[in-house]
Length: 439
Image 1: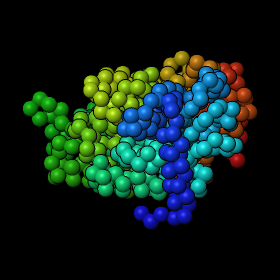
Image 2: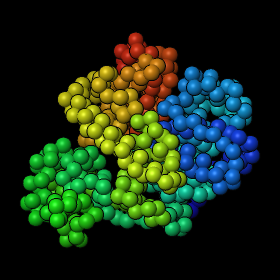
Image 3: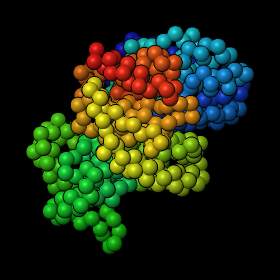
Image 4: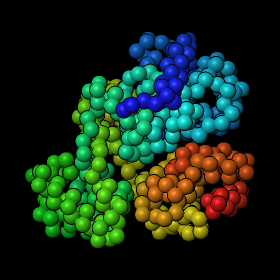
């Protein structure tokens, strides 16, 4: 990839951030709790471990004024995958920010692609920034990007990917893109596909079983469930052709054209079925963070003993919660004009309501907003699609402005954003978001 002048300026900022961060005596590393936050946090932690430097860690769901107050006595803080969206960080002492979210009015040293004209929502995740700041773990940079819905890897994400390929950490293959090629039994592989949503197959295991049978593809071999990666070349070819035809017949030619694409394999790590592919690894990490054990995800990134087994237990819990959430969402989406609304208060945990919205957004012509109870009131998560982004959707700005209107905190990316607001303000918040989206 040929680097432009703004790319080079950004890389200089990364070097500056590394120099200052590693000059800290005993910093608190504050990182987000999702896949991108865990990978970028792990990359940062690994840099301190390599240098044998003291550090402490603090994973968090959000960075609101309550968390900022807790950090007032800290002398040195490194914010990772957050920090750029809350001006209150200016009140803290020595701070370095490694972020990629929309930012304004931050006076602290910040390595953020958006400050250099690079789209942090599509072209570089926080994990990618962290890998460039500390110049290692480019495989985790790819995992965090994919987990943050930044697919395919373009712009500076591609630069990170190329560095990972060059270091032997990553292998790029053109393959069927659907999630679960290594970890899901074939029927689940089709039934729980949401990218793309496959009419007549997604959420219909019985149809999936018949679909595979009609293609003469056995779902078991010696009583062991087969996955996509175990199929022969001819079987894969038949499956891809049949899926392509089905999507075209259903008027989804755009989805058919994106069925096969780049996949990213982590070649230097242990060949566990759930962590070999970047997309599947990111789901495991999301499971850890969303169920209050981000430290397990960090340990898995750092390949600590027994971390994989602990992460799989959280993944099982995560899958059950997601499936129940999807089942609820399928029957409870309400059309609010400019967006669909899912009122999941008391039903779906605030830590996964955004994931559920994302998984049921496939094929929708409007963004989805979902509300869940949180510790401080109500969390609203929003998800769009790439097609909507191309048409001008910016959920990050909408959620930021609407949350400010009702005395909450919000923001994020154009395609995915969130807000934490007072419980009594939900109706006003939704009305305000609706007006912004109409504009």
